[in-house]
Length: 179
Ligand SMILES: Nc1ncnc2c1ncn2[C@@H]1O[C@H](COP(=O)(O)OP(=O)(O)OP(=O)(O)O)[C@@H](O)[C@H]1O
Ligand SMILES: [Mg+2]
Image 1: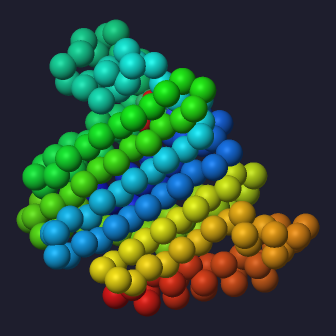
Image 2: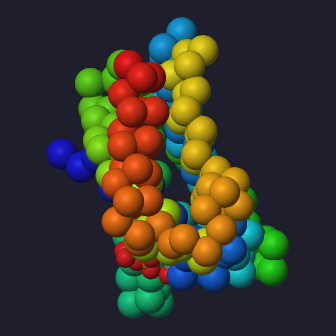
């Protein structure tokens, strides 16, 4: 079974391809509402309404007319399979917001997966992009804002071995404390 973290990676990579300079990734686990909500917002190139329609409904469109992948449809299906919902808003020149709500305790809900690794991978692979990551579980929240980190680090890159190790531990610990 696929993991939600891998969907997040896919969708964030779409944002990077769309030349976003800032990507906000939010995961909200609300056990009381029995939902797990993932929201990814970027300030990339955006999509036209016509294109958006094709991207989200691949199975109702003739495949031959579509030259796009499966990242978005798979994410949508994964959420809808759990009694959840899926929404994309996009505007050319402004950006895109993808929101998937999963039924938390639904038997078909994919595991969240290794979010720490996903986030570490994204922020270090695309250092010129600012990421804001927020993961909340009930009242607890872990936040990583690369904009703030870069201010503190100055010229020292994330790829610096010491920084990389510190960042890796920081994200892992932050995530672990949510459980
Ligand atoms: N955040 C975004 N901003 C602008 N365009 C986007 C964004 N996300 C998706 N798109 C457009 O929608 C298309 C479909 O995205 P989707 O993730 O479904 O497939 P893909 O990225 O083309 O391929 P795959 O994810 O299967 O590798 C993309 O090719 C891109 O043109
Ligand atoms: Mg994609």
